[in-house]
Image (tube, rainbow, N blue to C red; front, side):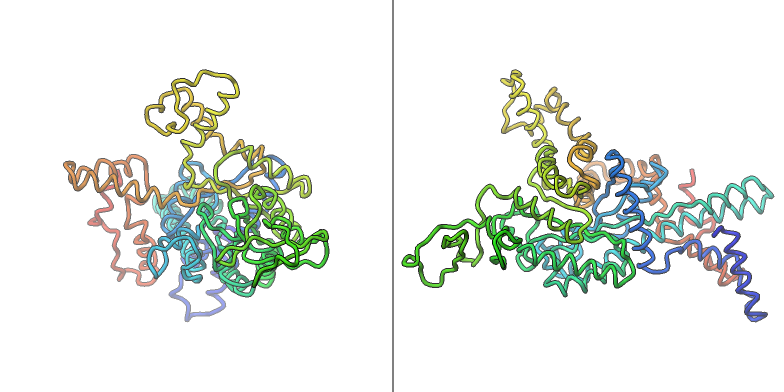
Length: 531
């Protein structure tokens, strides 16, 4: 519906209610509607699910059409990302937000900073989704408010061309609302707990939920040791629970991202149930590290399994966890991914220990031999030392090519001493093209960085503190922060406007008319930034 069509609709509503509604301005009511096109979180989930589905279809046709996101831990962070993306690229297409469970645990828990072990309040996850979309909706209202003021100014001056341009901009306004891929960790309990939390997350607006195959009460960060996985059937129950949550809430297009931590997980908490040789439980158990035993060698309290007529003792730790055979991680990842896709998951996530295109591609090739259109979400993690990893990859390639490496120490390639070397430059180029290369070669549909703003906030705060509390004093803030905000056109230099003061003034005008006490007058110091 166009802006003027909405004005016409609101005018009809006013007329239906007679003289008691004479104080109501249909155009202002239309503006409120246009500024708030999404009435509920479910409206957002349905809208963004379609975006993701269309993007997934586009990627299947052309791997160059991969998508990206950055992790968020606050609504303002998410809002600034999308405002910046629209400013720099003119569109939000292919750009999402990622809600990281790690950052929720570290930055949003009432317990204070926590490790990524699912100890934070589960309600904090849907609360953050709702917060992110609240800020994104305000970004819409703020931007549209500026267009409405442009329209009013054009009318006041009688500039019909400017008025038509403003109206067209209003009708063609692109929302800041984008898909959020939200981390549900290992489901925060059993399948019922996963279902209940998934509903809350979807109701808050999430169209894509990422769940991992770790044991819920033993969950670890994907890049830490001590990870414990569950048998496939346990994981598939949670995938089904999430799908039913999407269906119940009328979002059948909702996306499930099935994450496997098997590459770095050497332990399992339980032996899978198996009915017959070769079934899924038997395949899981085949990865267990076992010793063959005879009946007379069975000790007290031992757990035994039989396979191919042999009696086997799985290696069990004092923690009551069972070990997998070393070197089986990739095989387990492949089986995890295939079974997830065959049981309702839409996208995969393989947590790796390093960013290496061919390592990922090797597993994806095997998965796609069974499920041809398998696609991945990949964690471009700050837990990797990207500089060192890629310099070592180039170093190893040069060794194979027989190049002279006497000037390089492979273990010390992170050294600033190498920054201007040809090896470092080649490594940086591989980092630059990593996402495009991996999208084409390794089936990665979506690239994300989980914790970028955690690190940028720390770095920028450290630099500001060093300058401000040092010799630079106030110049440390003005030169490196405010002056750059002005010159780069960072919207939040007008922080009152970003916090909604102009939106509030528009409301005061409508609610109180001439009696409105507005904040945006000539004495507002934000006017100093008009230049």
